[in-house]
Image (cartoon, rainbow, N blue to C red):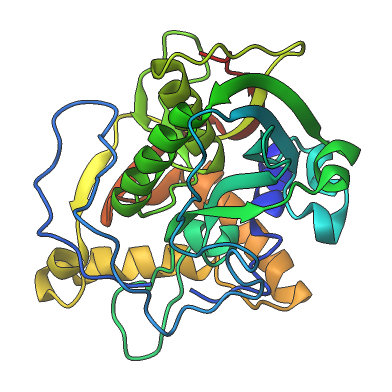
Length: 334
């Protein structure tokens, strides 16, 4: 039952999403260490026109993540922001499953201006988690970019009503400007959203096979950067964040688009990957989605198979109990 509830939470927006292929540098061979390092890029590629979001990315901010300059003499309050995913549409529904979105707020003492900074999917969560299967295109088609968004204002009601809005520190204008430069660099090189954290088991000594790269990870990276700049961060409450876990034995590297799809010798593997993702396709009717939930359970729990797309490469995961969990776990401020 927990497995089904987790899938329901992650696929609730697949009915309304559309999905990117991007030009990337040549792919490396299978990494030899765990977790597999998240791949950084030289620059952010253009978005494929096929990918369209139901809710536009960063509608009131700078889509390139540019941040205004602050005067050196300014003192800027830093706020920890957290609210249920899709709170604007579903209220606290996702909060009941501890599926939370994280951001950072800033308030300038000199200008009395407030700002919000967050990192999230360009085309909604479902598109970053599962691909489209397009007619006449052999490889699954992904719209999985994420990016930073910085905009003026903090929506107090949005963050505080069903989530968290807490002051956790104060920084100088110099610190803010140094952080802003780091955000630009991070945003141009960390391009693709990764939903899953994959571990060998839930225990404290588990091997981590893959790390997620999502909104909360951006917040953690930013806090660490602020700490490196000398910021004292503290919270009066426990700082918990959402993690979506898959549990498996040691993953097997399979290849990338060019080595799997369109290769006669790999046609069986290509067909298996396509069949796997067909179950998670968007725009399903409620009847089809109910059928797909049963098929998802059979593939992942009964047959213990999962195909993971990470760093634009495919991996096979031999799934293990408890298979999948959403955990709201503590990550202390640095």
